[in-house]
Length: 438
Image (cartoon, rainbow, N blue to C red; front, side, top):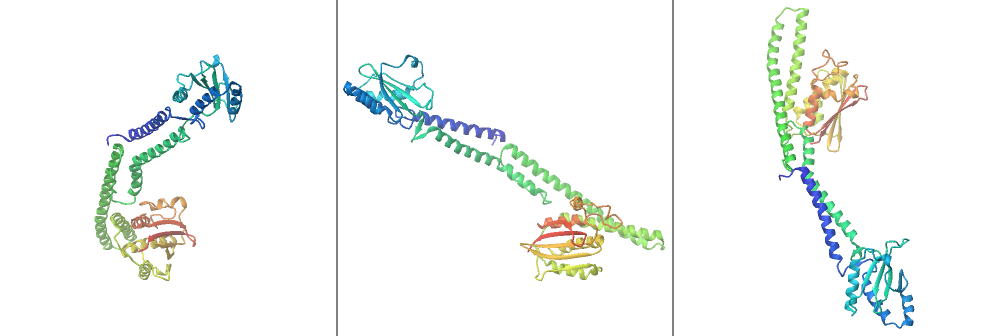
């Protein structure tokens, strides 16, 4: 638990390499004893050499040439020479093969024979693959046996390098699993951090993993608490000021109404009404920040029909509902606020609202279109930000406080839906809201 992430990864890699080398050494030293297997044909090489020595020594002198010719085939050559050439005296010998041959000769009653096993120094097609075996005969001459054979340590007929490579792959996989296990808290942290911005309340993340990761997760959790507290305090302050300001605006409106009629009186009343609208939008924004998605369900068609029936500008609203009633996982009051913001925006900036409700797999789609100037694609992401307005078409004289789409976005995100802006078939803006079905 005290090892850092870097130290853990270094330790895992070091242990993996150590395990590979250790196993390779164990297999090598375990396989290269007197019973070791050398090459494809060398499993029986010591006994073959001992048998040839006995056969040559017991064969009559006139038949030795025939015996030598009979065994000089299939990559082997057999001959009787006075001794090893002087130029091969300094060549490194294969001592383990020599020991194996001497042991077999001793067991057959020919102890103390001089045996020399060398690589064939000649260059050619089989360079490095031919052994030259010199065995002293009872007469003092040497039996020379050339064998084409790859001198490779094998286990069960398979080169030891294959087992070392296979074990290396297994160890590497185990090392990767161990590294992935150590990195799992970091992956979980990245996934949880993506969910932090989706909710106002902090998302507690379990503090696991290496000390650095635990410290990082602790810092993220503390940051979430501070951000949530800051947002709540700011929103509470904004809501409190707006609530008190609404009271003073009401008093101011009553006093202005008592003034004699004049151009200045009408202008003051218009300013008070604009400020009241701004306060109402700000209060809605504050309430949407603390709203929670309570389990509920309602029929969007019924909500829209009721809204149109009670709206003074219902003639400018075209409503298209599905033949079968649909239900969304949202309270009626929340859906009414959502629809009111979208339709009022369409009427204010697009002069007409075309509203339709469609069904989708596991969702209900609400589309509100207008005939206004629309919104440029590069501005569509910005209009969801609080108090953002496009001055060219949505000025303070004709527009609101820039909170309508912000409230819509928060309500939709709170209930697990999506909101997107696009081009309307009527030449204006199309707002598409996808809500989960009840």
